[in-house]
Length: 330
Ligand SMILES: [Mg+2]
Image 1 (cartoon, helix red, strand yellow):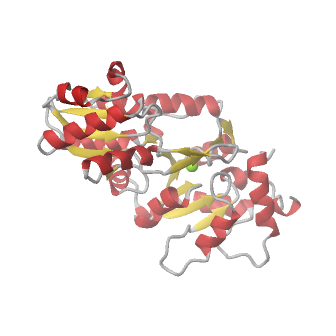
Image 2 (cartoon, rainbow, N blue to C red):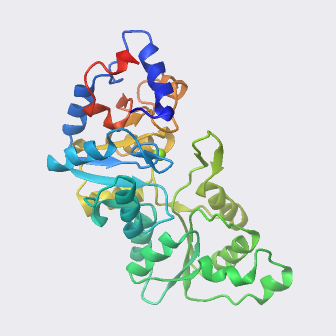
Image 3 (spheres, rainbow, N blue to C red):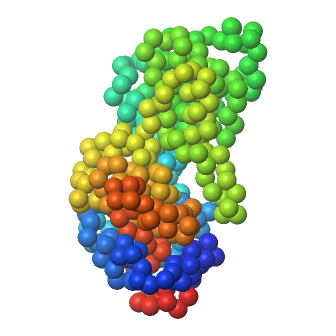
């Protein structure tokens, strides 16, 4: 069954004039063989394996096919809301399986914690703006956090008197920013106090996405909005740790042995997923089951040589397990 979300771009793809550019893959067998030609398959999550917690067609089946063939399948998301453990349980629930392992999970709070752990000394702390996933991953590596939900008792506003009275913890050496659905003025104030007063305090972001797209098509402000607020107020630039950053590429290289010619990144967003692969010399698959519509595909494929574009465009991840000719029947 093809969900409503991907039926429209698929029909549009089928209606494109032939011959299609060679990097638009419309045969299931070709889809499968491109994926099978790589040893490490990095998958974005929302818009690639599920939409709004509903699995996309054949998502679980193709993931298992790849795993059964001995491939390393990693789930690489810019979301930092959940720790690796919580993300694993979420994906297993959505895909109705127990086969996925914590070691396959790469939410952006994981490279962020990994990067921070390398920068801080014993006893140094991190001020957190963002979700529990960030705190869990830092604690897992033995790094203590302040801020986050523990700061809630201060309320959302920050008067001049509050700002003057706030007790600055001298051990805070990093401010980390992820998506905080309850983001407020107080958080920026506290973050800036640390960045201004604690010598060498670093600013780190889990991702810099501008927005996410809801199933209705409405745009939901994403972590980049929070990052920009802290950057603007502090005058500092955050070191990013999500897609398309070099920190993330260093992590997947070091922890998972990702080698450029043996790996592929599959995603639905050009500015993060495809740029991640493009910037680091890894082949990419742009799927049309998420936030990239036909207009975006035509725009990126129409770009000049050397400009950001996906290696291949496929209808959706699980298309490789469909019967031949499916696209032409739409
Ligand atoms: Mg996505």
